[in-house]
Image 1 (cartoon, rainbow, N blue to C red):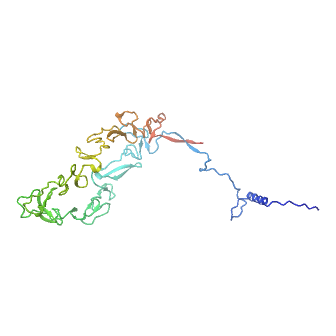
Image 2 (cartoon, helix red, strand yellow):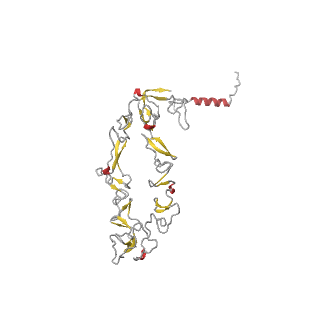
Image 3 (cartoon, rainbow, N blue to C red):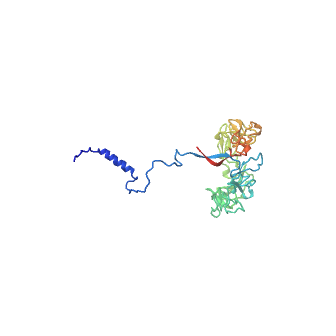
Length: 398
């Protein structure tokens, strides 16, 4: 028998064959047993919503003609009634349904506003009056029955009761330092002629009162004691002789601390040239009128104004910007009168006489902007400044 010498197989080739054979077997993770029933490994990704290679599917859009919720076509008090021009969810004149108006109930200190198509009651404070009305008992019949700024049983908040005899002032119980509560009112017992030293002590002239009273002086409460000479109103005894309580005093020689340039707000406070004695919310003091606010004083209306921005004093005192047209706002821009359209309106016809006549939120011929026309022939409305579109049946794939 002839023996042939075999050529040795290179080690790298053997290892490569083993690796290929192993890859051809079922995919097995380290630490797991092999499963003959497991499917072979796939390297083809499955398309899903996040796959960039998946085909894009878009909804078809067609012209809409039916009012989408919560919009409806309601008769307008003024101007045309646009199709789908009323938002029933927010319109206080048509809340939830055409003609359903949210009302004001002044005797009950209540009003109502349209929220999601329902008139919701809420407390109302009269403009110009410092009140904070609350419905503390939860009853609708008597409305917002409590003003928490002054009610001692509900001071600052419903149910927050002050101690017996304590008043409620600006929503806080009790009196400021140096004052006492008398009949639910805070008074200063050191100078109050009706509650001198304590509640209910009313001062009367003494038996030895002066037959001829010093000018602007009278007998009252000083230092918590009655029968003392004192100044009335805003007059002042700047030389101090009234305090001696003698009938020969020259009285309260300063007639009014509010107007005296040499005694402005107090004895001896003299105003410099150009200053006036006035009260701009900080008590009477010497100041150039309105200068601290960067404004100018207009004596004809007795107010501080800004000539650059005030439409009632545009460029000068009393320089009034004329009344604006429909849906226009008067604007003083750097001392010149101008007019801006109210939000959502525009002057599409170019005629200043009728102001900003176009409602861009609902006008089908000027929807969102002047000249942007909806398909009126098909009945397409303008809803919130956009020509109404709706999804059609079917899909389009790109």
